[in-house]
Length: 237
Length: 101
Figure 1 (cartoon, each protein chain N blue to C red):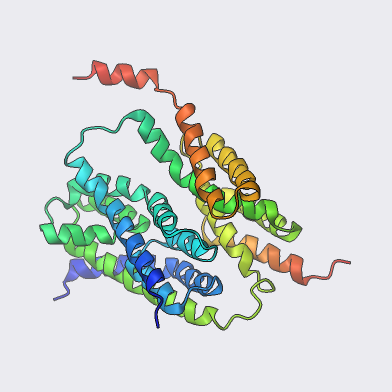
Figure 2 (figure 1 turned 90 degrees about the vertical axis):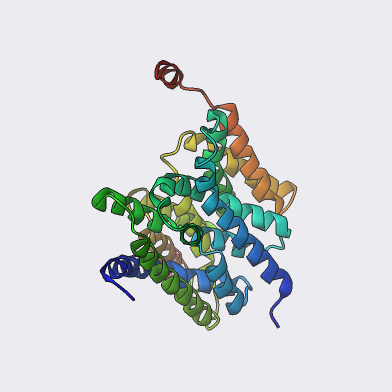
């Protein structure tokens, strides 16, 4: 049943799974610390399967944000997946229709990166390689979350253990990950100022959407069509 | 036993996430091109959203939190990932448990 190609994928998945498992443990611990039950924390890993947005969701569960805003924020944080699935589209077209839509459920950042590498190295992406890798990452991620949730409930004083800085520091790392994007140095200060201002005037849940909206609006206002691109696209047949 | 409201939110968030994972595939097989201004707006979304979860924590946090986040920022410029978290976490622990005065 398990052939060489599946095993190669699974081996790749094992490396990725082990290096992301600390984040899974962290997620489980932070979720329980924020008042989410261990069962719900594990369910989030199994159903959403996207670490950054899971932490965003957990953060919002703790501050009584309305449900639609939680779902919208998870959607916003995971928006990058649209680009991944667009880029991967030509390479999964030969998968069977069911396999295609099952495969896309498992499309995480490392899954995308390693799939793109496989295309470069082998000239194609085998469904067995993709799924071998995906399922291995999935099982390790869900198990690590469950362990973190179980272990997290044993943690005593979260401030003494520095648990309260883990989340903002983790999000800071995520923000830094987008620093190569255009207008980053405009969007971040605008969002930061707007969210701080909103948190102290309008109040807690709304500072997220107000701050985010301000940053996106700033990007729209300062958007410039690059003239070279426009000319080039017209010149080309 | 399991809070239904939370469970439903998790399933809806899972569905929203799955939509992002198939949307690009579906779009590529239909649409030819995203307008540049819309692409710029979409590109700004993750940094804009995530900043709102960082900035108030920094602004409202005590000096220990501020120092920990600056340390994490400096480390994160060179070494992203777990090392950034470890640096910020370590700094906060040091500030809270070492007797300075």
